[in-house]
Length: 270
Image (cartoon, rainbow, N blue to C red; front, side):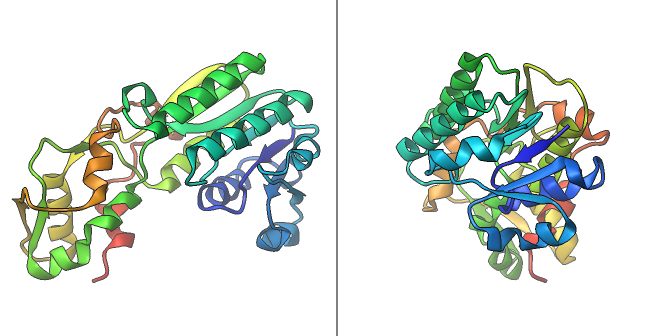
């Protein structure tokens, strides 16, 4: 078996590959990257490294050659029209390379979103299904990283977290949890034509976030609703399904998702 991972030097790709090294022989992993310099640590470990650029279709077919499983990590390009073109080129190359199973990092509950991001992931899923290649869709929740836009350090200093009014609920988890689930699927046989919603097992609220912050900071922190707050993140959050949850991740990794308290530690400087 050979497992090919695109974007292997990115944040998520690195975490997944590191988990895979504990599950399958090193020589079964192939890291596809745009810059060999970023993959030098992999080469030093003896992992096969291949050049792979979504904007260079000629690089893709050879990068995917012989793949029993291809993990296609979605493009991070800010322009959705370019992202879709890149995704189409990857899918075409996977088909030409006769990839046996195509796994794609999609977005959790995309059917419920009202902005282009979820729709792009749905379109990519449909394009993959149209190839006839056995697939697995790993629909990732919005990463817990979004809380970094909330300036939690300042909130801790003043003892108050201000948010816009609303019934805010979130399914977000750390990338590490998603990487564990992806590695489990890649290392095991099966999972053909399956879709997994990789989210927290239960939703959490801003009240939960405030309580976790207070526990970590060891000081009282209150939650205040403020209709005057201007922050792009809230408009974005209202247009995606950030609250629906599933037990898929818990079943794949054999434990609940990481607690909110543990998840936010990297974003709080105390």
